[in-house]
Amino acid sequence: MTESDRTYDHLLEVRDLHTEFPTRGGRVHAVDGVSFHVDPGETLGIVGESGSGKSVTVLSVMRLLQPPGRIASGHVLYRGRDLASLDNAEMEEIRGADIAMIFQDPMTSFNPVFRSGWQVGEPLRIHRGLHPKEALKEAVGMFVKVGIPEPEKRAVQYPHEMSGGMRQRAMIAMGLTTAPSVLIADEPTTALDVTIQAQILELLQQVSREFGTATILITHNLGVVAGMCQRMMVMYAGRVVEEGPTDEVFAHPTHPYTWSLLRSMPRLDSDSTEPLLAIQGLPPDLTALPSGCAFHPRCPFREERCVQETPALLPVRERQRAACWVTQSGRDLTAGPPPRG
Image (cartoon, rainbow, N blue to C red):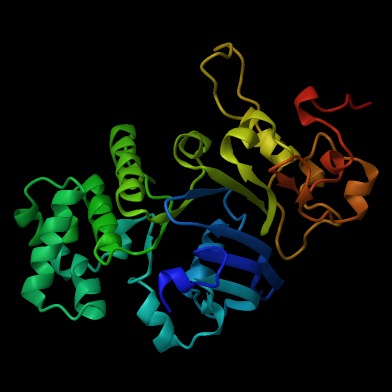
């Protein structure tokens, strides 16, 4: 089938994905009914606290879950083909060739006993059948594209001989060698200083513009989302609680969790003497979620219905959806929470 004959709606579409982990404390629903899509040249940001299900969602997409974790149900459609139903051999043809992933810690993602250029060229040897010398030449060329100085020298170095910023660039180079249609970046700037972070993020934007790559960016940093992502998705306790165009979500958050995240960010126009507004409480134990909305124990807007019933993800503005009884009833969160007696 040619591109012009395609029958799919989105390049990558996840529908009602459920991923679970059996534990001694009970069955953990790490991803609980998540749906989203991403198209060529678009960057989707996924945000949320640690344990919200962000990384498990994309690991499910890549079929890289470690047992006993498993996809319990749902569909992961790439160009209309359901990746969740493929066997391992079929998935290996797609992973790294059509969908690539940049992991948050390149030091543990690279093999310490192989030279960097050899590892960056590996996808070309596997998926394109290139001779090792040709693959190494292509790897050096990719090092140039991602801004690694002295690329020939770096290509024959081991990962530990490179700085953190260079290793992250090399990880991006490895992800891009096969010109994938979808690039997943899981906290790609973790543990890097702010200057290197800015360079890495600019590189990802350049890749999206140059190659038309669809990018899924997982991050805790809402400032990064504001600068890079056309759309964003907010996760809490394994579920999507809000989604929509980034500028609209920032201007009009429609879930109290998103509102709370934005309120906890430092602002240039705020009084420097005022303390940051932390979100009260802690994320829930996934083996024993509270009744109703999982965020209600921490929510300053909660109503009685929030404690009893779980809200569905529904439209609350023209292009935004939220899983919140308060905003679904028409309330504007920008007015602030009601006073508590």
